[in-house]
Image (cartoon, rainbow, N blue to C red; front, side):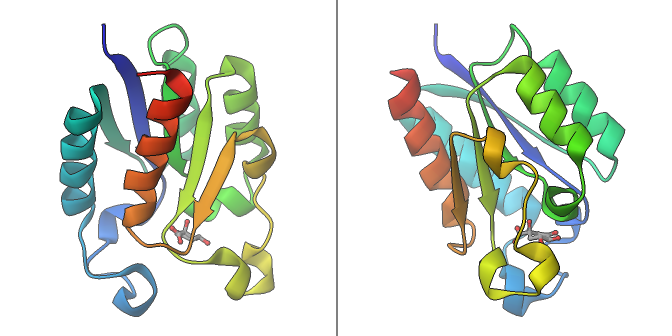
Amino acid sequence: MPKRVLILNGPNLNMLGIREPKTYGSQTLADIEAMCEAEGKRLGLAVECKQSNREGELCEWIQEAYGKKDGIVINPAGYSHTSVAIRDALSAVAIPTIEVHLSNIHAREEFRHYSYVSAVAVGVICGLGAAGYRLALEALSERLGA
Ligand code: DQA
């Protein structure tokens, strides 16, 4: 059975393409999700992509992944810097998770330098744009022995 990976995108990432293209690039979320699905196929992973603007919904999806997904790639977006709840949900399910940010959060405003999620992630990729999702899938596939 292929390893199952959940790709979660947080608030405002549905606005990619329109939203601050100098910072986040010109690709839409649909473009990124299509790339993730293609990369998943190449790596033999079953990839499912979801996006929400709501913290609780992201927590629910993480909880639902328990026993159903083998890995998670998450861009928690603005919630990275505020959400103990998303971090706790990831800790609770203990599914290997890679955190992705399109921009280099360390080269931006100070409030973006800390992510609550990083300490419970197996790794963090930031500043590489949409390629970060592809690299996260590659790393997860290696880790999961897919
Ligand atoms: C982001 C960085 C966050 O600071 C920001 O709030 C986002 C996107 C990124 O992908 O670079 O919404 O996670």
